[in-house]
Amino acid sequence: MSRMERQCWWYLLVLGCLFQTLSAHSDFYTSIGHMTDLLYTEKDLVTSLKNYITAEENKLKQVKQWAEKLDVLSAIAMKDPEGFLGNPVNAFKLMKRLNTEWGDLESLVLKDTKDGFISNLTLQRQHFPTDEDQTGAAKALLRLQDTYRLDTNTISTGDLPGVTHKSPMTVEDCFELGKIAYSEVDYYHTELWMEQALKQLDEGEESTVDKVTVLDYLSYAIYQQGDLGRALELTKRLLMLDPEHQRANGNLKYFEFQLINQRKAQAQEAQKAREEGKERRKRLTSDASKKKKHFREPVPERKMYEMLCRGEGIKLTPRRQRRLFCRYFDNHGHPKYLLSPVKQEDEWDRPYIVRYHDIISHREIEKVKELAKPRLRRATISNPITGVLETAPYRISKSAWLTAYEHPMIDQINQRIEDLTGLEMDTAEELQVANYGVGGQYEPHFDFGRKDEPDAFKELGTGNRIATWLFYMSDVAAGGATVFPDVGAAVWPKKGTAVFWYNLFPSGEGDYSTRHAACPVLVGNKWGEFVLKLPKFSSVNVYDTVITIEIRLNYHYY
Image 1 (tube, rainbow, N blue to C red):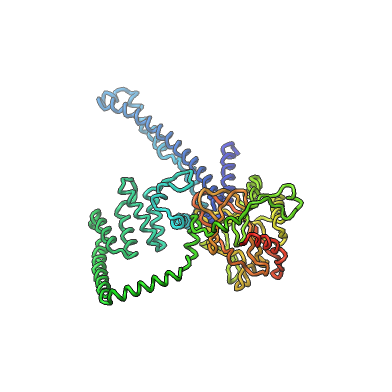
Image 2 (cartoon, rainbow, N blue to C red):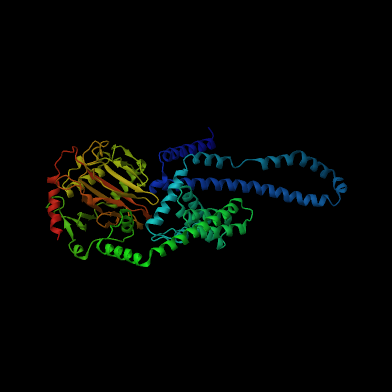
């Protein structure tokens, strides 16, 4: 085997290993950790593309030199063709050029230098993100836009809070987002992003997408939302650009007809309201205002969840805030922490949530991520009816499970949790490592099984979850809070810390105030590590393990 063959064989072997790694992954958009692999794939493709360009440039250089030489020769020869060929050397060289050299040039031009690049690209395309990934990433952007109340121009210009790698969006990017929203029958976001695409086109940005196409989508999306007047105006603008547009001409007549009917209906409703009398309307208004004074509707969970993600709606009063403390904690004189207690901070009073600072080191975090990354798979939820684990659109992340026997460091981390909580880790679930993707989130949920979910943890073969311990293994530039919508609490990620709370009361009943959610990650990469405390048998009495916390919790109540 020649040296070149050995090099090719080694290159293919390396690529094969890369393909094997990538093929183990799916749902790339659900994990930033796995998306980093795609950057290395793209880097390899760029290198291959540059090699192809270099080969093409070398070939073109040779062709150009040949053409320039013959151009000069032809110019001389054509001044006196017969006299030129009267020189037998010129005659011989002409025969030689046409019989041999032009054939060589043909071979040079037809030489295919793209084979290496095309074969590399073809092989790697098998492991590229899918349509599902592109749609998932687009939906994540729309979700972030809604949750954090971002206008399209802020996103398009790349001016996101905490961002370090600013990346503006092109007309094509905006148009693609609008198209994906349109395919999902989401006309609200279709309108927003088609408007942004039109705005950038109006400002003079060059694009392969034309205004007619954008206006076609935009006018229909606005019509679907009931604004006939504006849909009609946009349709007229479209026809000014393309008077022969068949669908727009049909829509123009239809919108005009619908608008006339709409205005007639509005006029009839206004007349009917006037006939009913102003006094009656006043009385109804007065009664309604009285009811509003005595009854305030609760904020819907989804709205409260998004408010808390933005740092709004937190319900901790100054009086309650004063009852939260920071302390050095040794878990009632535990030998390991008697001389070097850990830093503990009260995050919330009801439910009682505490944060441990500097509780996991950078070295431990990197080792956990190293062990977890090859195993990251799309995160699942436990079906409340069947108890079977399944994926869900409201949980956008990937997770991996690590056991204590896999590495001494995992065992050390587990032992640390046991020493600080007093809960035996023998009955806990494995260490769950989660990495959130684009707009990664986990909508409001309980960590424990309710009475109407007898098979909630059937597949895990365990009892109900007593408590939750959550490590934060990264800082997040923007977003990514853990929020509790029922009580208005928000806990923000901080690398090296952990938060802890009990899911069950001493009686074994679930604490419904612990319903919580992971907010979408706006900017950054969120790594979290969860330990969910589970007894091996559902009949275990949790009173003894919880009562000490309950006593301490009562101390902070007013």
